[in-house]
Structure formats: C-alpha cells, structure tokens
Image 1 (spheres, helix red, strand yellow):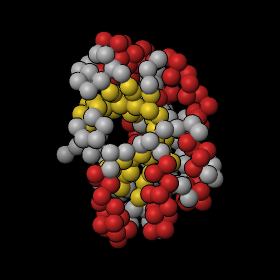
Image 2 (image 1 turned 135 degrees about the vertical axis):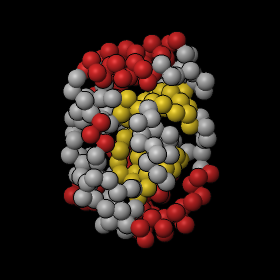
Image 3 (image 1 turned 60 degrees about the vertical axis):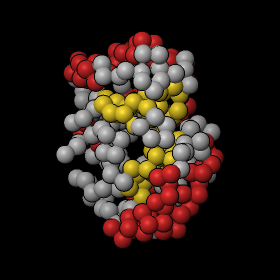
Length: 230
C-alpha cells in the first residue's frame, strides 16, 4: 500500500492516504475502501506518523485522505498534521468529509487556521441513483445545497444503472464549483458493477477534462499515486 505521493499537474500538491477509525456512515454500496479502517488508535497513529514523515512542503499544499472522513482521524493524528503544516510551511490543505459532517467543517478550519478545500463524495447529482442505488447518505436535491458547505464534489462515472444523461448533467453541474474530482469506477469487492460501454463513451466525450485545471480526473483509482499499486 503506497500512502504518499505527489500530484504534479494542475493543482500541484503532496497527498497522503492515512489510516482512520471506522467510517461513521459506512453504508455506501460501492465502497470497499472501509476495509482500510482500523479500531486500534495506537496502530493508526503509528502508521500515520510514518506516512506524514514523507511530507516535504515542496508545493505548500497538502491533501489528506483516508478511508472515511477527516473527522474520523484520531486527535493525535490531527495534531501530527498540524505540526506538519507548521514545520513544512503548508499554506493550503485538502480534506474530505462525508455529507453528515457538513455542519462541522468550521471546526477543522478553526483548528488548522489556513485555507482548506473541502471535498465530499457526491458520486452522482441524480438523487434517486445516489440514494437508492449507491446509498450515499447525502439526501439533497439541488447542487447549491452542496456548494453551501463544500468546495469540491467528487463524482463517479461508469456504473451500471447510470445513464449518459445523468453523467452529462453531472459534468455540467461541476462547472459551478471551484474544484471537482471525477472518478471512473473500477470493479471491486462490492456488488456494484462497472459499465464498460458507458466508460468508453465517457472517455471519448470527456477526455478534454484532462486539460481542465479545475477538474482532477482519475481514470484509475490509483491515479493520485496512493492506494493499492501494482
């Protein structure tokens, strides 16, 4: 498992994949990332200390991800991140938080006292698909509800049951945000399956997103350089 990398295009930044306590939501039908959760805080902090030791501050920007939300990291790990921010002169952080934490984001902003880009997994702006199929636990009906809290939605494409119309709408909606991440779904241990024809159509139509400075597009889940790499 590679837990440290550098993103050297678009918004250049270092990225770390940390261990976290179990995801407070944990009901998404497509997600097996929660297999990386851990209940032993001593183990979590030991691993995270080692991972964070790789941060150099080269770009002045650090993205911190885990298999849950920033709020599911132990306090000791948050203290480590804060120390890294101060020691390495980090000027901006990227964090991810589930929709259930939308009213608590200022707690993190107040703790770190530097600009934070908050990402959240929306997966689809189609409410029925998001809630009835993916069981995301983000029951909103208008993207402006998301924009009220979060800076950067993460959307997923290429899932059986999705339609081209849904994806076209999602690609239009993300233009309203200062940043977005588009993930092309890959089969995993869950029952949710990839739609190869839909992926092929998407890649042909939306390949230009590779050149959009506001959009990070992941053709494979390890494109950020962290996770299970061959």
